[in-house]
View (cartoon, one colour):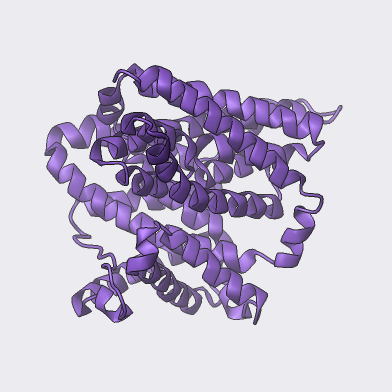
Length: 417
């Protein structure tokens, strides 16, 4: 009964089901909008739009079953989700506009902006509220992301990638947390959220750590907002800075992979420096993503045994297990399945086709997730959260440290690569 009622476990089941239907060929195509210049309708063919509607229906059925099981009612979820699907598609289409695409302004940013405009102008209509399920959508997407973490790609980069990703990340996380709590006197939960998002992998890490610490929704929204803004800035600035400073493109790719938060943004920024730099950047980001599980477990342990513990508490393993984000189990399982079962049996070409499908499904889910974040964000509340500027100061100091240390490590490890 607990598994049936747990949203955390449903993210695992749904992620595995979606990977399964992609693996078995039940889903064969998930179209993405094409690049367009003046007419947005040129981005989609009629067949492509029908395929998008079919994916919407499949996800609607699966999500409706999960929500019905969790809360025993659907309310207006179905019409709200259909509208979410269309708004998510609008965000994807905007991101494919020629000028917008040149600067790598991803669909998640436009989905967030659409949500922010609605919530801070006309307000969120009541019938949309049942479909605002940020964590559900993102966690399912992160389970699917696990299938892309292939051990063969990690090993191809060698020990340099491991040392860069796993050397800088915990150091920045620790120093940023100490600065935020000891110097700025910020709330410990907000500080660890921002530290994890900055040092590991942005929104993915923030979601995992929010679950491990039972963070307030306002803290998560603030962290995600700052992380997204940073991603846009770094995506545009880092490749230009690499060229301007004459930094070797492989070193630049490693630098981008270790500092830009979003995997999609890492690919876009790395691509500006060439295919080899993009591969280095992407693999380092994937290695960082692996750390989500370990860091979530450590932080869940610390919060249960120290931070949230009262004098009468006797925390045990069961409390840590309750805090541990269950989607990470699905994430790890699909990584192992893809690396050691699907790849050897089906080959790299077929696995690549499967991952294109799951990647497109993940795009759909992330689009409606960031739409949800925008709909949940009130500028007045956000302004209260950043009053005094301390969260922004924490981020600037932490990201600056991250940029400096990652560049030093990249230079030492990839200087003669």
